[in-house]
Image (cartoon, rainbow, N blue to C red; front, side, top):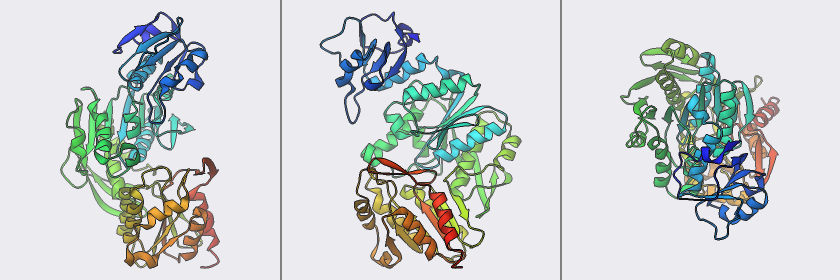
Length: 490
């Protein structure tokens, strides 16, 4: 409970109609969640306009309304506050309602197309090992210390985010590591959050169904760094040609990291295998359990972030050498009775898929087959579907196209889009199997000892969404079961 006058104190307002010396008992942007004494924010969303539900919110007990357009007819007992952008203001109000929790912890935001989950998750594990209680907000899970809950969004809405941060602060967290998605930035979910630092991993084709074009997607990512304060740091991947673009207009202290070029924090891959990486980080050699050059870049980002946060270099390097990959990120499954490697990875963009397959091809002997299973999500960016297929066909020995999360789309229509990426020279090595479990089983039956099966797209997910229903589906578990079935064959 907070007084309305207090939570709007530092917000730019256009007009107020009504009394602000009232108490607010909660905030929401969903009129169905309004309770007595709540503040309702009318947000002009992509699907519907919250202004249409103001009367519903008042009927449910709303005491205050945030809106961009003042209603013609106002209830006498309700305070109406007109602002330029309801979504942006809601974040600031929510932060104030919860006592500005981000001001009392060091919040590190990680953004980019690929690598966000790995960097945020491993930073959480690293700082926990260093003796700090930390929070994590990621695609996979939300964690306070070692207590975990299932993630609903990569970046939660402003209300849930500040509630999470308040809970983490109350539990004693000193650091919070969180993914910052482009959707979250455009929708102002992190408005009002004070970040101690921001990390940029890379950017490539993704989410163009939402952003419409790549420039909008790029601008969304860049806006995160534009908002950082002079007290914060901005750490960007210089190996990505748009890394320096991210920090063109930031007020934060600027730092770079890179594997392939000169940077403030420099790394080098010395050896790479399915057992891990031998790295050189700032002239110090260490072995890590993570696999692939893309993970060398992620580990360098983690190392640089820790140093910028003031951690001891030797302790950081020791801890990094013990870190394991985030779930569903180059996650290896191997049946002891057959010599087939299974790799489960969340790669669901052309760039991420290419990096994973390149990693496999750089390590393997090429005396074995690489069988790649891929699908593309329904109700998402259609332009990347043929590109995903083209990458898989060019760089794999066999390819099976299948379903990912079809959602409300017909899975066969998704596969038709994917098939457009099959070059004529690759037709003979490509299969199309709509049922994902059957596709995994088929790949296992095709595999001989020494072969590698890459199962891409869903990674850590435990469900498959079809026609609005989420069914239990765990890629790793199903792959393990199917590999066991081929024991007798070999």
